[in-house]
Every structure is written in C-alpha cells, then in structure tokens.
Image 1 (cartoon, chains in turn red, orange):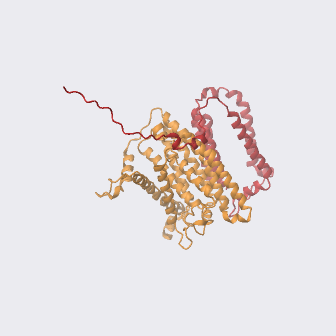
Image 2 (cartoon, rainbow over the protein chains, first blue to last red):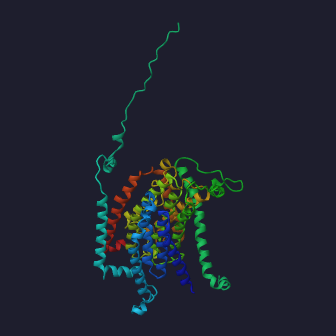
Image 3 (cartoon, rainbow over the protein chains, first blue to last red):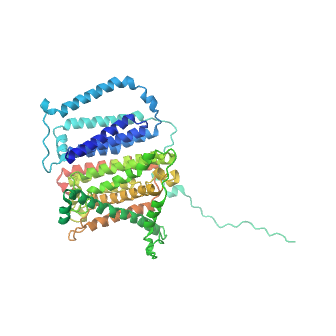
Length: 205
Length: 343
C-alpha cells in the first residue's frame, strides 16, 4: 500500500466515524462538532484528488462560516433529543430510499469502466485548479452561474424579510443622531464663583 | 547536509520538513512571549507607567526582560481546574482548537521569495480557510465550560468573527485582483518597485478595512467584547486556568503576529525594501510586522471598547459596502488604460 492510499483510508475511516457520530450523538452540540470534523476530513480527501480549490472552499464556507452559525444556534436552543428521535420509524422508508439512491450512484461512479465512463487524466504540472474553474464558470457556464447567484440573493432577501418584524417601542438609538453629538451639546460649562459658606461668629460669652 | 540525507535515506524528507516547522514555530513562540512583554511595556509608557521592570536574569534586572519567562513558568505549574458539569473532552480540546489554526497558517507564509515552507498555488485561500477555523476554539471553550459568562462570550465571538471575516475576505479579493494570483509569493512580487507600488496605496480602503477587521478577528481591544472584563468577567476563557489558559493566550498573540505578517505581505510589500536601491530581505518583513503589531498595541491603549451593536454595524454596514465598492472600482479601472495603477 502506498502512502496516498494509507492517507485515504485513514481519512475515510475518520470521515465515516464522524458521520456516524453526527447521527448517534446524544448531545446536539457534539453532533454539530462531529459534522465539522466530517466536513474537514472530506476536504482533506478532496485535496488528495488535487481538487484544491473545492477542498479549501469547503473548509472556508462550510467549516468557517455555515457550521459556526449552526453551532451558534444549536448552543442556544434547548433541544430535547428524545422528542426528535420519536419520528424515527416514520422517516425510515424515505431515508432508506435516499440511502439506496446514493449507493446506486456511488456504484455507477466507482465501477465507471463497466458503464463506459472514463476516469479523468492526471493533471499536468503547473495546472491551476482555481484558474480552470474560473475560466469554466465565467465562460461556458456563465448563465447557470449567474442564475445560481441570483437565486442565492433572493434567498438572502427572503430570509431577512421573513424575520423582519416591526415592533413598536423599540429602544433603538439612531446611529446618525449618535454620531452627530458633540461635547457642546452634552456638557454645559458653568462659571461658578468660589463660594464660602456663611460663617456666623458665635458669642463665646 | 548531504551526509544527513544519505544516513536518513527515505526518512530524510519528513525529518527535513519537521526541522523547518520547528524553525518557524520556535521563534514564533518566543516572539509571542516577548510580544506580551512589549505590550505591557509600551502600554505602560503610553500611560506614564513603568511596565514590568523587576524580573531579570542571574540577579540583573535587565528592564524586566525575564517577565514573560516567569509568567510562562507560573502558568505551567498552576493546576488546570475542571468546572462541575463541564464537557470534559471538549473543555480540554478547545485550547488546542484555538492554537492549531494560528500555527498551521504559517505553513504558507513566505519570509522571502525562497524562504517558505509550502509554496502552494492557492496559499491565499488556504490562509483564509485556516484562519476561519480559529473561532471554534472560542466557541467550544465557551460552551464546554458550562458557564453563563463563558457561553455569552462564545456567542459574541462567533457572531463577531463571522461578520468580520466577510469584510476581510472581500479585502483580500481586491488584493488577488491586483496581483492576479492566489499565491502569496507572487502577490509580493507583484508589488515590486518601491513603497509607492505596494498595494496599500491603490487599495487604501481595503488596507484600512483589513487592518481593522484583523483587530476584530483576533478579539483585540477595542473589539474585545468576547472577553469584556467589565460585563462578562473574561468571556469564553473565564473557567480556564494554568496551561489551558496559557494556550488561549498564546493563540491570541500568535494570531496577532499572523495578521501582522499577512498585512505586511498583502499590502506593505512583504520582504521588499521600501526604496528600490536597497536590498530586499526578510528583515523588512519583520520591520513591517513590528510596525503593525505596534499599531495593535497602540489601538488598545487609545480606544475605549466598542459597544456590541456598534461592532456589528461597523462590520456589516460600513466595511462590507466599502470593500464591495472598492472591488468594483478596481475591476472597472482594470478595463481601462488606467489599469496599470492597480497592478
């Protein structure tokens, strides 16, 4: 076994174990962290495929941003794991169908020779993954790419619109007003003459 | 060196790489120790105090130069407390999660055009991906401590780092548009020809955004609401003691040095000399890093802590629009004959 396959099998084992932890962990935060590990390991396996742009983007987007927000939300929620487990048998057929489809797809890809699919040739020296992806995305697939971007934008606007609530009596400070304040408006300098308390001379007698 | 190569045989490559890693990490840790000393000294002088001046070596005071060593020994010999109800494994993993990205990012940082551990093609992307992992140390520490203050600190930190990372990423998009490369070595080489050719000038708004977002990203004052001593005691690491706390401390300072190095490489010409007739050297890089680090300390001594809503407003409503506009400006100019101004 050469070094590359050793790396692949150890990463694949970590990936499977962490994937298993995602669905079996009792604690949702532990499950989310296992998912982080799974993403990271998947990125490492993509690096083995010389798909460095996709691998690094996976870490950057999913591990660095999406999962942070995910954990952010999960940390604040009091999730009852028993309640979530209740629907297990109802969802089993759908889950089984999805798993079966994924297995079939993997079989087609992995035994590609039998179905007339050819494996990609190894990249030549000095091949830049990023440049190649950029060229493809902005020439051949530019309409599909722009369309995806617009759909994402709509999703962002929709998410904000869904959570936007106008509530009366909010104690929000107007930032512009705040910035415009100067020391003159806040402090009044008063010129006070030095004062002495009235001193009454007492009669000693 | 060839003799070593023959003796070690196939084990040569890993041993040689390991030696290079040690050659980067060891000076980094020493730099971290003395950055804490510099911080206390400089802020002390800015506030008309003396700073640490007692602990020296062999009976000599030496302006307090022994202070960081004494601090490290003290922290190492202290007990690591485990809070009741803490998630033990995560509680102890969190410091490692904090420091690992701060160290791993140095793999692609070039000190000169030949002195770089891994000259990878997409090193800028690698840096962005690895530094974005740093937030997990804070988040996991805050959650695993089973403490309200720590959880609040972790939540603040997560929101803050995610917000500022976007601005930071866009600032770097401007850099890679100017350099037309994701490789840090090529980015520096694109700035050759004196300090007026460095990217801080054509990309000035992005430079400012990157510097300030870097302060926010490392949770330094005035953006240190994740610690916020006055409101949430010490935030995410309130329950840590001894070496576990020291590792968080190390991670914060290692991140500061990393941001300083990246600022120097992306916007201040890296190892290039400011005037073309002077020789290029890694010393220029260290000088630029020291300048940026001094600014970090200066900010801390000067500005009061931002309010949390002000931080969010600055990140989302000021920095992101500024970077987007400047990316458009750079992209637009590149299509005109004036494009050379931005290269």
